Length: 347
Image (cartoon, rainbow, N blue to C red):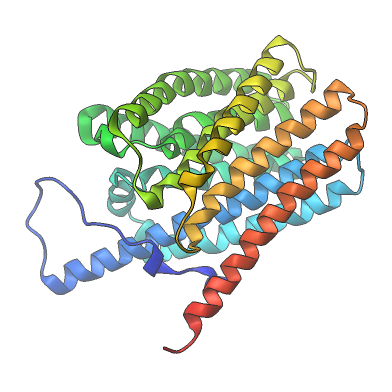
C-alpha cells in the first residue's frame, strides 16, 4: 500500500510572504521535504475518494442488482484502508502539528485537497451505518466538524486576499461546496434531517457564490496550466453531490429540484466532454485520479435518476453506467501500478 506514494510528483514551493527569517539551509530543506511528503499523501487521498465514490455508485445500483451491495462494501473497505494508511503517513511527516497543518491549508495549489480527509470519513461512516448506527453517527460528527473547520479556515484565508484569481480552479469547490453536499447526503442516511438541511444550504450557497467566481476567473484569466487542467472535471461534482443530497433527503423521489440538478449535471458533463482535448496530459501521473470522484459521483446520481424514473431498459442502462465507471477506475488503478513499477526500475 505504501508503495503507491510517490513524493516526486507532488512537490511544492515554500511559504509565501514576509515572515520569520528562514532557518539554516539543512533545516529548511528538511521542512520542504516533509511538506512535499505530506502533500503527496493528501494528493493521493483522491484514490481513496474515488474508490469510495465508486462504492457509492455500486450501492445506488443495489436497488436494481442486490449483489451490488457486497461489491460496494468491498470498495468502501479498500477506500478506508487507503485512507487510514495515507492519513497515518501524513501525521508521521508532521501533520500532527497545527503549524504544519496551517501551512498546508495556506498553500495556494494544494490547500483545498485537505478536504479529502473528512469527505472520505463521512462517506465511510454513512455507508457502514447499517451495521452500527450510533458509532457511525459519532464518526460522522467528527468528520463533519473537521470538514467545517477546514472549509471555514480556507475561506477565511482566501477572503483576506491571499489567493490570486489567476490560481483559481474548480478544485476549490471541493471543501466549500461538495463537502457540505456530501455531509447532507450522509446526514439523511444517518437519520439526521436537520443536519442534512443545514449542510445542503451551506453547499448550495457556496456553490453558487464561489462557483461563479471560479468560472469568471477561468474566462477572464485564460486557460489553466497544463498539469492543473484535469481539475476542470471537478465542475461536475457539485451538481452530482447536490442532486444526491436532495434526493436522499426526499426518499429517492425526483421532483422539480431533483430534475434541475440532473439537467445541470447533464449540461456540465457535456461541457467537460468538449474540454477533454484540453485535459490531455503528456504522460500518466497519480494526479489524474482527480478524474475518479467526478466520474463516480456522476454515475451515482445518474443511476438514482434511472431508478426513480422507471425508464424502459432501466436495469440495462444501470449496468452500462456502472460498468463504464468501474472500467474507468480499474484503468486508473492499472496505470498507477504500471507507473509505480516503471519508476521502481533501476536507471
